[in-house]
Image (cartoon, rainbow, N blue to C red; front, side):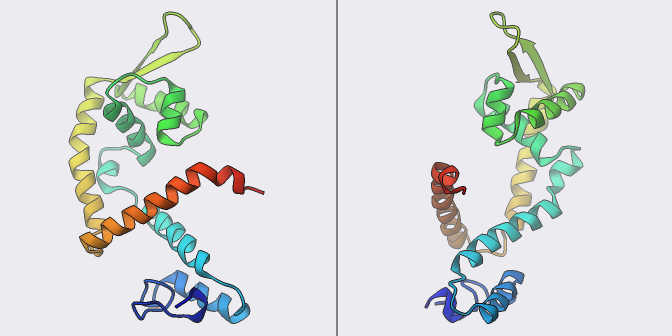
Length: 185
């Protein structure tokens, strides 16, 4: 079955869903207006975007309890998982953030005593950032709770399907990271 004929191999409407999600309703409306167009891409991209929006609205409970945003935790986590000092530019690349956003977050995390900055001995324009003991303890303390929270969020999806979803999203992400700039018009 194709996206434009309204069904899926599982019998639901709008690929993989039971026809009750908000994207399925939008797709049905577009099909009524433009029955000649393939809405398959909208069904995938729309669901990815809707999931991302809902996850951001819900925020991350363990992080929120610790007084951290997801972006701050990502910075701390990058320092923890790499196991060494990083420059702000390296942190921006590791966390897919802008340099300005990283600078702002580092200032806040430094004030809270979670990271330390030191200047480069050869180039005063370069800073190196490392976790403090408090920052390392915070990341190590939050990570199990955060992973449990994320598992609870995904609990409605069976483990084999989670693996499939992770693999498919990995394929999409790899393709987008390699060619999205070329697709911009």
